[in-house]
Amino acid sequence: MLEKFFILKDQYNKLMYERYGKVDSLNKALLVTWFITGFLNLFFHSILVGFIVPAFFFLAVFRFMSKNTVQRLAENRRYKKYADKISAFFKIQYKRIAEYKTHRYYKCSNCKAYIRVPAKKGKHTISCPKCGKEFDVKVR
Ligand SMILES: [Zn+2]
Image (cartoon, rainbow, N blue to C red; front, side):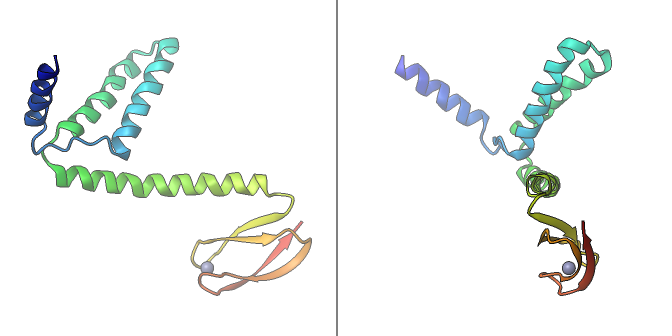
């Protein structure tokens, strides 16, 4: 029994030799997309989506089995760059709503950084902590 397990493990290692073999962020996103769209399509029965849904799964499998590790790592890096930007945007929007009574968020016109300011009514001059540019804001 245990011997059979080791034989299987050995066969798996031979199969995966020099292959990417990682469930990285991009593969996780592909699998989650595959699962969610596939689940939703159980209710909508779209033929077009039905054709696209398996592509997410096969793309994840292709990346997992790929021998071009350098390319797969580069893809994952590019994906993470955009995913981090999007998640940072939604985090700011969430904070904006959650802290609305006590703070306001402004975007610096020079460097695009978000600036968190106490919500004191009236006109104020604030300076960006990142680039130092000063500008006027009106808190209502
Ligand atoms: Zn700035």
